[in-house]
Amino acid sequence: MTRVLHILDHSLPLHSGYTFRTRAILKSLQAAGDEVRAITGPRHTAQGPLVEQVEGLTFNRVPGPVGGPPLLREWREIEALRAGIERLADDWRPDILHAHSPALCGMAGLRAARRLDLPFVYEIRAFWEDAAVGNGTGSENSLKYRLTRALENRVVAGADTVFTICDGLRQDLIARGHDADKIALSPNGVDLTLFGAPPPRDAALAEQLGLGEGPVIGFIGSFYDYEGLDDLITAMPMLRQRHPQAQLLLVGGGPMDEALRAQAAASTAREAIHFTGRVPHAEVDRFYSLIDVLAYPRKKSRLTDLVTPLKPLEAMAQERIVAASDVGGHRELIEDGVTGLLFPPDKPGSMATALARFIDERYRWPAIREAGRLHVSENHDWSRNIDRYQAVYQNLLGSGKSAAA
Picture 1: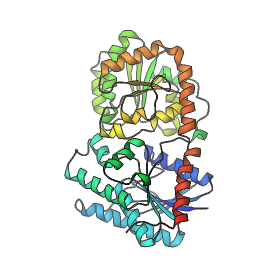
Picture 2: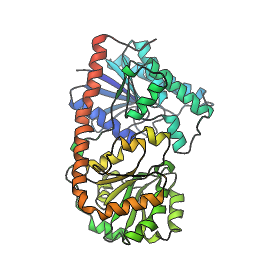
Picture 3: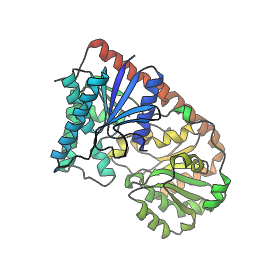
Picture 4: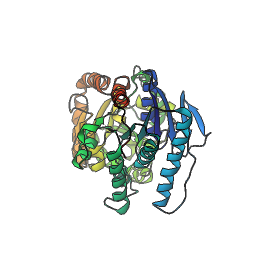
């Protein structure tokens, strides 16, 4: 039995793609016989005790926030988390430290691993400097952007093994000069035990929302600019020329919420565009049941070309039809015409044409649903993906490796 301490930016009970991936990893490792524990840094904002049990998982907290001017503040965060890791390690005695991006967590884990003489694994889920550009909180090639990238490079260089969630991230690291032999893939995945038979259409909810019979194009997630929801709204009048009863259901919220609502109100298809706001996680399945085609119209950027999202996999696991923009992150998940539909990014007219043709060909949907579910089962099921971690853990422990000086 391997004892692994996971080092995180934030965790359950907060809900995000980051926390759901973490839950799946920890639960799958537990089921496979490993002993796991996790620690979060000062950026975990949920109120709770310093040692918290959530869904059968144990999370230790390093309290925050940490103050100070930029750069000094981030260094204090790294040192606070490093000290927390070392305190926990003195008591719990992990065999391996496994840090998950951002690089602040990685550097804290690397420094602790050196001091504790433990093997160190670093996992990159996205380049956070690119994510900041995508969500509007940063700019490409700014000082902060370059410093974040430099810090990540330092962590990657010092780690014994690096995992990335997709090949786009891996190839970018290799192009920077990092050793390809130590960079492995741990693709986004789902816990298929959480997804049973698709729920029947919730007719009462459909009536409440005024959806009619559809077809319903939908998006469930966070409203960031890079998601391209403005292009989807722009496409709706053109789609309704071919399919007058088509409806758009947008479930969630985020920085673009107000702008998207204003755009929809000014659209000639405004009566067919429905916003629900954020919904409780336990209610999400009811909204999935209403949607005929889950649309992911991400704009083309470094972020969307390099990073694979989780939502399309969750949709395919629920035997839902997926249509997405033809960017690198989607191409790693979806085979056009087989497991879903790919359409050109940043072109609402082309999106409308592709969706209209897709609706015309509904006879193909059962085969696409089946192929999508099979693809997830064979390539993105955590009960299988977890073998990648265990093989690396055993190799590091067998070789006696620890974080490089």
